[in-house]
Image 1 (cartoon, rainbow over the protein chains, first blue to last red):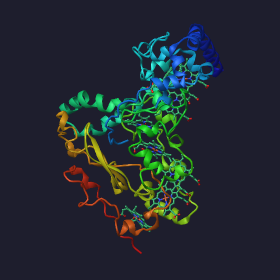
Image 2: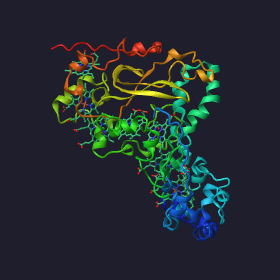
Image 3: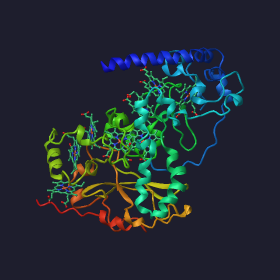
Image 4: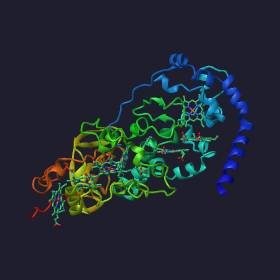
Length: 61
Length: 346
């Protein structure tokens, strides 16, 4: 019973979130530069700068 | 690698996490912009702010906030007894936040991207999938100094028998341990859900009678590692905060500082007398703790020099800590870890 209520609540909650964010999803798929770049392998490759090598420590771990 | 920055377009439709748009976790700007504009104010580690996960995973985040991976309390409490009151204040202010707290794990370090080692990270684990586990890219980065390479055999010895049987970290270290149980432990030795050899290998269930006898005779006297650690593991010497340490392979057998009745594998811990000298901390109580600590060496083998020969310990004392082999200028507490087993009556 408890689980069921929780499940229904989760569904409602997600539906509630969708309400706010559907637009964000559409935006993400269509026009956001985040998605445009981060799903385009050759573009990311051309923009990527290798980070400077830090002096690696012989830590424990 | 640039590949670690590529996101799978297909995920955006099917993975619940992308109900949120990128900037809702990462900040920055989502319009059509240049890289620099888009990344203005970018948050690289959104899960450092756990509220980004808490809205859907509140049970996990509530517990995780008290776990050792998040608080790194183990590192602080491990050295604490060496400090005077004033020194502890200095340590908390100068060293802890910048040196210890900085390597705490974010949720993303285990679930989204490979943590950076020496400034280099291989980036996203699987094109921004939220994965349950990927030990070879997550645990291995932070525990790559000793545990991981000892386990896989990359450090030089034979690999751990569990690795050979296809087991990885999370087969023994479950999420109950890694997320924590909501109790703020001060040391890894208190964690309730930590693994134990005996949980899976019940004493008395041995097929081999020689094993059973050996186990019975040494219960409470020698740890499992004492006989089953397969060989040399990494020992760290001459560590100075910030400067890195020198390490060499060794096996050291002696009494456990936490239970002086039990012979076990010991490891030199990196703290030496002048480790924090640069930060103006002398460690007034340095001699309160030894430099050697019991270590669950992750290089377990069924057969070792010690399972083959009783004399390895009872006569030759191979790899045993002795007065002569103690580190120079070490803690006065080291000598109490030396043990000379009685000869066997035959």
